Amino acid sequence: NYCSESEMLLNEQRYALAVMYFSLGGDDWNDGANLGQIRDSPAGTWLSGSNYCDWGAEVSGGTGGISYKQLVCDEFGNVLNLNLQTNNMVGEIPPEIGVLVYMTSYISFFNAQTGEIPSSLGLITP
Image 1 (cartoon, helix red, strand yellow):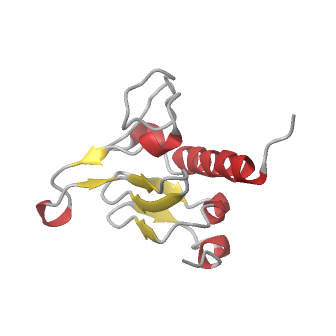
Image 2 (cartoon, rainbow, N blue to C red; image 1 turned 180 degrees about the horizontal axis):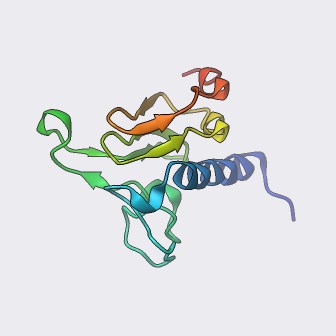
Image 3 (cartoon, one colour; image 1 turned 90 degrees about the vertical axis):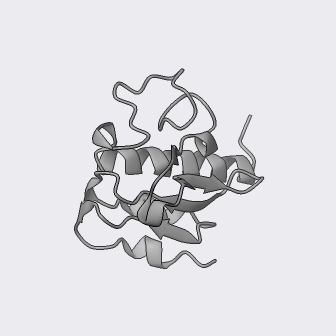
């Protein structure tokens, strides 16, 4: 059995998010870290066994005291927004981020990201 095109895209998005977690030091993140990659971790924990749309933590008291969700998907499971501000991310943004073709917002200020912004991120068109 082969995956349909939409199933393949969902698998690619899950993969891209996992690569981001490892590339940006996810085990040391302030919110959503999953040290040991425990599959039955609660919602809001990255790399849990649940749907990747449930990985993003609900963060309260962000910039300006506003609460936000780290990861927002549409009803089809496509990643729309990543808000990983002030999350102790360290490292390079991996080129796999370009797989998130439905993403319209990537917020990552107040982290220690290094290197160039992947050209694949610039290819995403909302």
